Image (tube, rainbow, N blue to C red):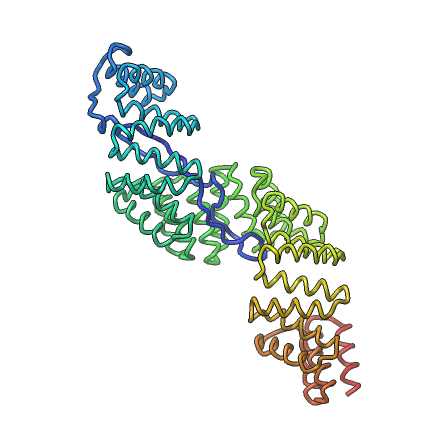
Length: 485
């Protein structure tokens, strides 16, 4: 007789982006996003106790056997009473402690579970089932170090323990050891080729290393084995998204939502696909639903805030970014995004404060330096802006927008040679740039440096680009500058 122990894996930290303006579709990151395989343990085979027909209470073995029968029938309370009786009569029954520990774990009473599992292991130190069970309890408590130690020991005792490989791989995946995770998931699949959860876990690990084609294959295999796995559809939808197959991604995410209408992250991922397809209102609806289902889902607030800012709903955007900071006060990105919304609303001073907080949390955040430079420039602090643009370039030497911004700032303080160098760097680095302001500003600089021929070429390019964009004011301003050469 086998003891069937359902274990819930508590998540894969596999975020690949947080806003619809950056990386869109994501893999699970919260502690309830993954469901593990059913784990089959056989503690009775480890204890040497043979099941026998007996009335409960006659002997320790009879009480134990009745506990096993009641456990396997799902009557955990009756099983618990039987195991209590067995241990009163014989405190050395390791299997009774193991079963009772599993019952307490099922009831989320992890402290009591550990007491019993520790006792089982003190009586039978090499019991692979008890080691695995204790490791799963440690994992559910967030104690990955002790959990991994137990899974390692369980695999030493039983190298064919598929679920120990899955748990160990999950821990490695969460901690960024992707090669080790993939090795364990692959071993589990070799041992049990028809285990759908093993393919799901490996699929998410493959997404973690940007191997989306193989991830699709694994999620598809999981679906072939068990067609009602919402997270397999969600994972495959994420992979399709990253492969640019948006219609296929949407089909899978729709199926994930149909199978589990309460899976917040499926709505979040679907919102990214809708955003990319230009269906902004649909994206917002999915983000609202994701937040309704999981009010702590920070990525949903970040994405909704970004969309709201793009729609000039600056109050709503600020509220969303503030909510992210309530949930995660150490989010440099949330401070930066909130600063952007404040700057867009005209409050440069408050924006500078938020950018400064972002930089305190992440001193290498190039985009925050660039944005703070923009805010300082809007207040008239040109030299402060130049310093921020320079720090942005120190953090990210190929940051073209920072070169352009610093070049424009140099122009304002009549440092024409520095302005020319920065603007030329931006133009050379982006030869197909369609930003007429780059050429206009460099034309102004060249005119100041006495290079009328070069200035005329830049103004002509700027005028052409302004016409293409339908910006009449910029076109007229450029013609006016050309007339003064």
